[in-house]
Length: 175
Length: 251
Image (cartoon, rainbow over all chains, first blue to last red; front, side, top):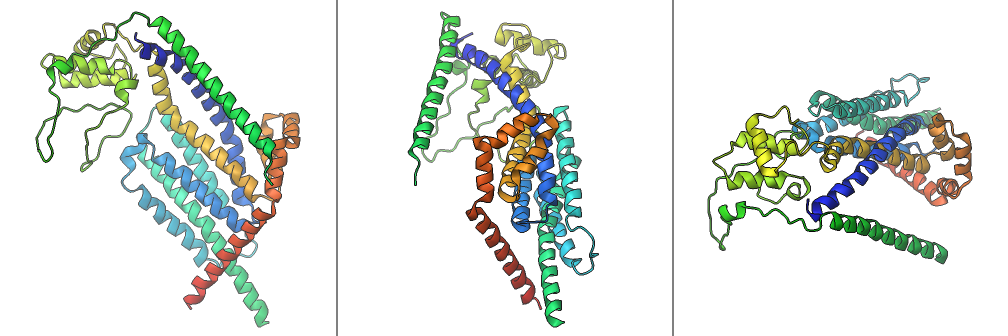
């Protein structure tokens, strides 16, 4: 073997070690990440609008970067359309049901369920990928649709809560 | 006010990282040089056979190419996808790939394209030696001078593992990091949330130390900063105004 081959040969052993540490870290990090994600998604106090916008951006960033991986090249046809269509649905449903939703119902319940589903789909897709199934169009389309719904619902819930506040203020002023 | 101590510390860290990196890669280079001393690089024969493509300004030529898939794990190209001629780092990075192409280009009538394709995927670590046909094995043996050269090769192992796990590691670590920052920037008591998230490890004393450390203090300072609070309020107000504007205009 020539110099370059031997150099790569030795360096690749360090590479395997670093990748191994990365795999262990990523397995360890996904558990707290899951808890932090659900906590952020369910919190209604404080800067709720800011938090939901930032969380939507995080979900978009992670979902898009995952689906854009070279392994999933074959699904690239309609995934963006799927995402934005689901986003529109997620945004419009809480807005148009703002005046008919029950008063005692927790507004972030839908967000929590969808963030759970998003996380489960991500882990399922990763497990399929690691087990040697790169062609998983159905799983990825469900994943991207859930991501779109989640992001849309977060923004839609914020819009709906703002509108409800406005309606309550108007009623108060009328009385 | 700028704290000069921090600048000096950062400078020190950068110098140490640079020196350590040079020493690390230098030591490996010396070891590689010692091991490979006296070994001559195998000359590529295809250059004597394949003509070089040269185009004068405005000149147009038509060539017919045979192409090979370098990554078996990737999806097939779609109809209408554009192709372009370009160099690929795989030729330099992937062991034995250059030798296989050299053998094929030097003796194109001896080997079938489908056998070369299987040999290319073999160098990726996606095909086992026993699963190859006798012709494919003969091609690899003639090109590399060895039987089953990929077996146990760390570069190919790393390449294969990085392809599979790279996406997962990048996604999971990216998600953990981004959500961590999200907790710090948006939660009223970030440290409590962070602590609960990692409490499953059962290392309460480590968490306690971490909370009292500089990192813990920085997190609390960021979370309680008035600038961040102002950003929260401004975003809230802007969002509320936008909603009122949109819904007032539709009446």
